[in-house]
Length: 284
Image 1 (tube, helix red, strand yellow):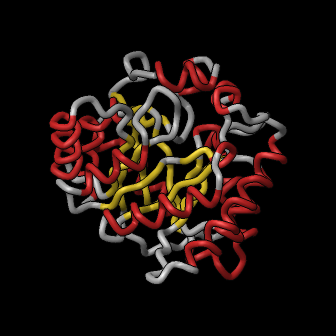
Image 2 (image 1 turned 30 degrees about the vertical axis):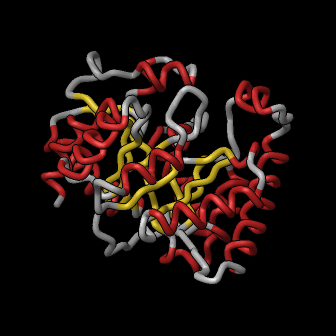
C-alpha cells in the first residue's frame, strides 16, 4: 500500500430505491437528513426511481447534497444529459453530485435498444459522454459544474478515474482478486487509482459503496447484492463493502479504512439506512 494521509472529514450518503407517492418520497427525504446523512442518492436502474425528478423533488424539503449513484452512461445522449444536468443543478441550488458509470446490466441496454458491448467499449462511451458533457456545460451562461463521481473496480476504470474523477466510488467487486484477501485486493485497487491520479491524488474523494450492514454474519441482509453479484454469502461477508458487527465495531473499522485506504465518503443502500445511522453518530 502507498502511504495514505487524508484530513477529509467523513461524509455519508444513502441510495433510495423507489419513489412511491409524493408525500411518502418527501417524508423519506426528510428522514435521510434527520438521520445525519450528507447526501441523498438515487441509483439508475429500471425498476427503481427516475433519478433526476426524484432529486429535484427531494431538494424542496432538504438542505443536503443530492446525487445520481450512478447514471448508466452507456444509454445516454450527451446533449440531452447536459440539458438535464444543467437544470437539475439549478433546481437543487447547486447541490447536485453527478455520478456516472459504464452500466453493467445487459437487460437494461437491451431495453434501451443499445448494444451492451465489451467493457472497453462501454468505458470509451463513458469517456466520450463525459468529455462532451463538460464541453456543453461550459457553454451555459452559469457554467454549471457539479462534481463528477465515477464508480467501478476494473483497472481501466481506475486509470480513467485517476484522470477525470472528483469522487471515485469503489464497487462491491473492488474487494475481489483471486489469490488475495478482500482487504488486500481492495488496497491494491486504491493504490492503482492513486498512481493513476498522480498530482491529482489529493483532489479525489474516495467513496466506499456499502451494500449491507448487520450485527452478525448469519443475519445480515445480503439479498440485494447476492442477486446482483452471484457470489455466495461466505464470500460476501468478507468484503470491505459489507459491514458486520456492532455500531462501535463498524465505526472503528471505518476509521481504520480512512487511515489505511483514504476512504472518507461512505454510501449505503436504503434497507440499511437506519442501522447505519447509529454508526454515523459515532463518527461525527
